Image 1 (cartoon, one colour):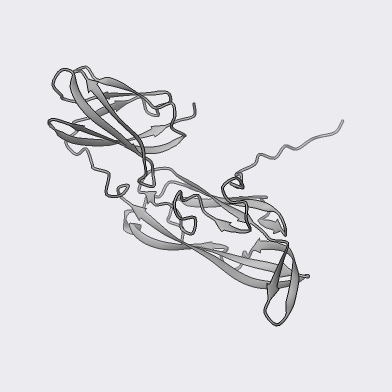
Image 2 (image 1 turned 180 degrees about the vertical axis):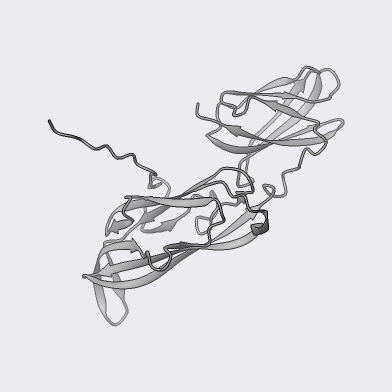
Length: 238
């Protein structure tokens, strides 16, 4: 009898978006930095690592790249906020030349004292024709308490949303006039607007179709004749 050990892939490099050699984050606008993390909210970002087959060094010529690895001494990844961890595909953190790989950063940052900016640095060691050479890749990173200028805190509890997490639909209730026209906007964790709709809301509430949203954390902003409310919600697996 032969035993087969399965390996669950922890992340997938985004080669459709990033086909060229280099290191790229999941940021929708600037793959040279990490999307903001939100305090006390789940965070996930995949960094795509496309390792070239060779490199040219001025005055020395062209060298084959055997592999690039995370240098585990003293610390391979620095600058992460408390509550965040990292893993990679392949899991041994060895990325051969000419391959597409990834590192995933995930977890929930919980330390309020860390609000602000950091720099996440990958400490790497590249092997050229068998000889090691250290190098670093750095990405600006921010821990925020809100998701940018477009988000507002529903401090007065004007809006209720359920279920949590939501999947196909999101129920919304708020103190409005019967059949009041409400402007709903939804923002993702980077502050990008992903939904914009006007909808009549009865006093009993309304239902929003969110089937087009992927798994993650969002902010719902609702503008009515009485003012503006906002609340966080999570979309689960469909």
